[in-house]
Length: 113
Length: 112
Image: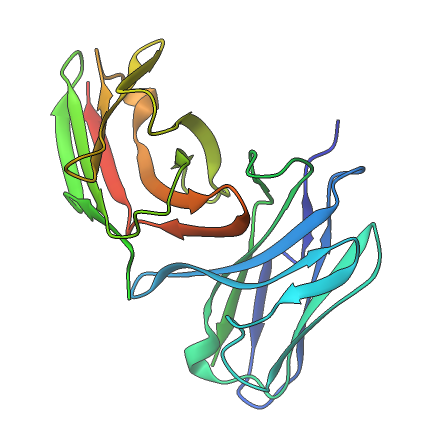
């Protein structure tokens, strides 16, 4: 079975540009999570969805960040405008069961110059 | 604030040795404690998990020890192998909450 698929794997952009990260969760998983990983702050939960509905977005750092899940097989995380401090690895993860195993994608490494 | 504190930040062990990672948690409502393993360039993956009604859980060379009264738990990697070189995260969570509180991570390097 295919795991969580994220794209792009690497993104280099300039400050002020819009960045869109994409995620395809594992089929049948009702919960989708976006995490950010940095050396300074470790793994941070940004937002999570249940059945395509955003449940908790309290981790989204600023209004520059937005996330959508238009259907069960696709989600986006958008940063507009991007800033150098947004440089990080962004992970998407999905799960089917309550308090179960989270399945992470391989991440999107974002560098904002 | 970080609800799960993890130490050490990194450790180096010889092949065949024991790696020990310690974690302490603040939130007494946590009732599920998974460990995730992350290799460079990959996402974290579940390694082993424990609930506080059990004091120890073993899966192969990996053992979790849990001390509920002290609010501490640890991961022991027995007979460490070079393939175990990775970053390990301890996690605290509640059954009715999908928010996982990750520790800061421990980078384990196993030297052949």
